[in-house]
Length: 217
Image (cartoon, rainbow, N blue to C red; front, side):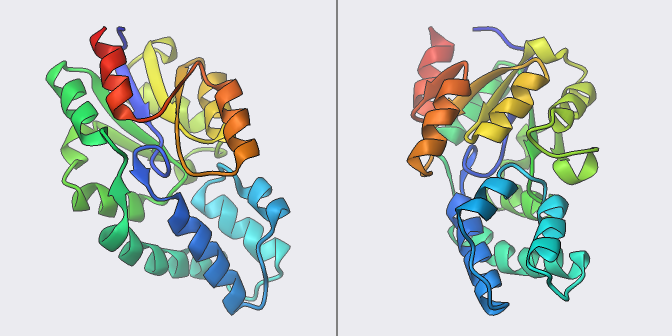
């Protein structure tokens, strides 16, 4: 299996962190007298940090500014990320394998740069990535392809030579729309979301140990 670059989504893909945002959404909205429901979850799937803050402000008619919402989320998230969030099984070994084989690596995430850099430093893996691109830094977040196209441009690798790892439908759609091959990776999520993600992926894997075996074939 030969690719010139591997691009990772962050949350639920490289690190086991989707539960963090579920908890933050619940706690943040409860504090404001609101509840999150399936409709809201569907609307924010794959959206960028800023896009989600704008949506929350408008949908729930919040008095806080978008910047205040984002700052509150950052403060809530960074402690959880640095104290409790772990890498997905086999992820470190796979990064080491790619590095040893001189395959370029990058992160394309809907998370904020501040939180992304904090978790990479926490696990001492920032050295593996040539670039980090967030959805806040492009025209539109996932499922639009811009974050992946921007990442491949920075890496100077054609989209067709990039392999992407994602866990949710909108992320997979974004990478496919960018012309990239996508491996979906198992994560704790709603069953209907997982079924859709499996359908959209070029290949579905349980963890990075399985990916390592595939790469070594």
